[in-house]
Amino acid sequence: VSFVMGFLQSLGGHMRVNLRGGKACMAQHLLYAAKIGSPGQQIGGKRMTHGMCVSILSSELASELGMDEAFIHKVAVAGMLHDVGKLQISPYIYGRRRNTMKIEEMQYVRLHAKLGADILSREGYDQDIVDMVHYHHENYDGSGYPYRMRGDEIPIGARIIRVCDVFSALVSDRPYRR
Image 1 (cartoon, one colour):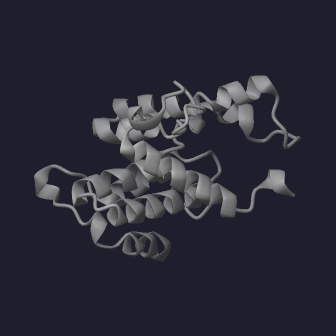
Image 2 (cartoon, one colour):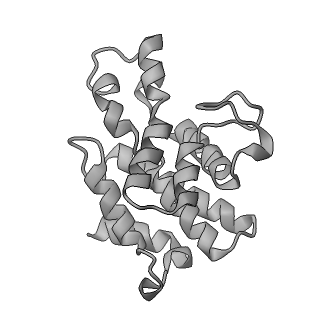
């Protein structure tokens, strides 16, 4: 509980939302992320921590860019849930004996953004959040996936999450770097 509370406090004022206005509170999103997290992962597990890191970085960056509170909330939720699509491909990528992936396995991994968007859409998440998750692997130069979008074609929230996701990955301890 203290771990969850610490995370919510670290998000600061961006996450205080009006429940009477029909918006879910950040704790509900966190619990949903934990519920759908990778099999065997606890809330303090690395995959969950990565989503929280991306969420915090994304909300802080959006704030620095002068985005309004509603947008900051959406980007924080999308940042936390951006890799939810990996649940459907986890048999292909987790629990393998080797750390390198075949081309076929990478093709499955690249489906996670679309699969995540589908999951969140079915769960009734706001379309802006769904789009941020869907396009979070698109690159500004058009070299990303799944659609090779470029520049302003990519929603600003997805661009924010992309930068924060890459930064989080670069500063994290990853098995393939050992």
